[in-house]
Length: 97
Image 1 (tube, one colour):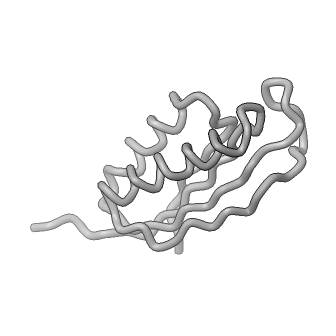
Image 2 (cartoon, one colour):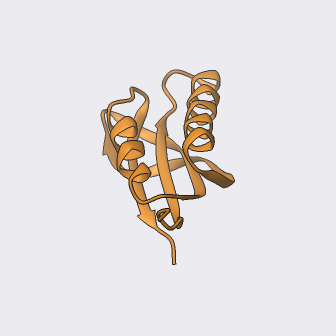
């Protein structure tokens, strides 16, 4: 029996220190990872925003929201990859209701 697909959303706060090209490259990299393992519904770029508190001596971050459907095992792997990728200040993957 196939596992049921569930709705998820992932939010990433990207470092802006490396410039716009590095931000776009990370967005494309994670869009491709999600597309390869799930059904990517949308990528919503919220843009550069001031952080509530400094993270790694940075006061601004570039926010991106991914909405996707996948089997329950994939978000765990996605979070692992986000946590070990340079240039991502914070990330969170949650089930969407």
